[in-house]
Amino acid sequence: MKITGKELRQKWLDFYKSKGHVDVGAVSLIGDGTTGVMFNVAGMQPLMPYLLGKPHPAGTRLCNVQGCVRTVDIDSVGDASHFTFFEMMGNWSLGDYFKKEKTAWTFELLTEVFGLDKDKLCATVFAGDESAPRDDETANLLIGLGIKPDHIFYLPKSDNWWELEGTVGTPCGPDNEWFYPLSEGKGEPVFPDDYVEIGNDVYTQYLKTADGYEPLSNKNVDTGFGFERMLIFLNGLHDAYLTDLFTEVLAKLEELSGKRYADGGETQRAMRIIADHTRTSVMLIGDAQSLTPSNVGAGYILRRIMRRAIRWCRKLGVDSSAMSEVAKIYIEKVYNEAYPLLLEKETFILEEIKKEAEKFEATLVTGMKEFEKCVAGIERKNEFMAKSDPSYVPETVIGGKAAFRLYDTYGFPLELTEELAEERGLSVDKEGFAAAFKEHQEKSRVLEKGEAKGGLESHSEMAIKYHTATHLLNAALKVVLSPDCNQKGSNINDERMRFDFNFDRAMTPEEVKAVEDLVNEKIGEDIPVVYREMSLEEARAEHFVGVFDSKYGSVVKTYSIGDFSKEMCGGPHVTHTGELGHFKIVKEQSSSAGVRRIKAVLE
Image 1: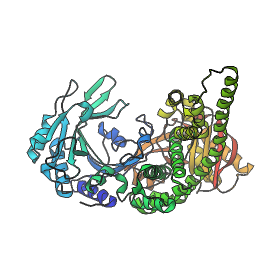
Image 2: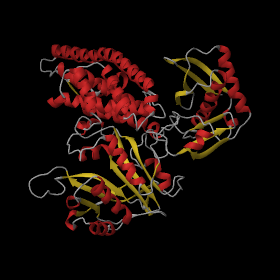
Image 3: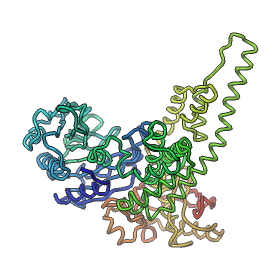
Image 4: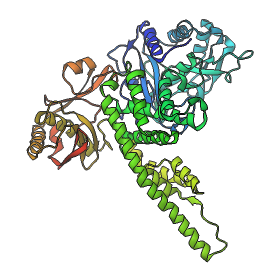
């Protein structure tokens, strides 16, 4: 069947609603720090507390379409199927129904809603090992539904077991994956060569611990079907970029470049990378948390993605304004219904893309000078050594540390350094670059794993105090300057806080002192900091500060400091404001057009 992205999204939600499920919406793409990962990388990740037994206010049957960001295989983006942003269609049973109902409903969805032939369906189930038994129960249920016994395959944990890699205290368990031949071929298709995976049903009946697995008190179902993958499959395509999610974007890139996507090669690769990376940039900047490019944490990943897109714009023969043109298509046409916040934040998104493009273009000029210094140094060494030693073999490799400095300080992707080096008859020490990069990652690991809402670089006692102080500062700015002042970003470490907010002029010295005094007044009152979880509607009714849109889930975390400050936030915070000490603003300055920046310390 031929189907658009908007139609697929609606069919998924409508089907599970008909089975008593509640659409809980999507949550922020930025991880809240509770699972040790920077971004939401799976549709079930935000629901972990409920899969572990916590009651969900929407009930025990849930569904949604959740955006995810995954960058571990960013270098694979450019082929026909890899993305940095993607969506997962999910539904969950929280201790309600289990394998019997789930196998029947997935079978019904695939055969009756999407029109697949049951005789062509294949499935895989867990073969069992020392940690859990073979899943004969699921296999027998599938046979009972009409799937041929010889179309069911038992596979090991590496294939049919789901868990969130690198975490503990999270739900996991065996899964049942569904397969179908992508296109008609000659004769009977052979599994797995002629089949494509279209989704899986995970039975999260275990808890992953540091020592192994323990049975969960509630048996859950966690279904995940890749949105883009399903769209490819249902339209009989082999290339994700030929779905309606990307066709208008590719047409715009063809118009701007004068080249054709169908030409393949580097042209096709460039268009795919620009299309994917711009989409991810739009989603992260347009997120409820308004992520912006920076040199730390999630902001650093965003900057890398954006600069990679800009680099490929140059390779395609278009300037960086192409990113803005592509972004408009995603905001106004492709995701205007599913992510309405993007329309509200369109100006902000486009401004951030433009600013980063301008910064990188300037960086390229500076970086090229540094690159030329590297080359000149090699040439001088070769010239000197050749004069003193006739048998000297000229050096032709740019060192790994030098290449990493170009990457880390000047934003040069390794591939750019390699390309420039090749033009000068040189190569790059990629192993040395990898070693320098690994050293950098090890130094940054604590920062990255500790990244949480509010821009914290760690979860130290001092950083938590600073984070709580941002709530007081945000509220004080609304009182002293304007109720329309809102946080636009923050960065916190153990020594200071940096807070960005929208305001169209510099603060006067009197205003700075008034804000400072008001914050200290609230600290002196030693007000309790009260945490509550509540529904989005309750948060709205009680006037909590936040962006109310579909990217929040149905349940939000809130922190109140008396009646002075009420914010939706992932934490962490102190228990009383009296713990903060004395608040002092050390600088107030411009951050960007219409955005001011305050730097402050706690003494």
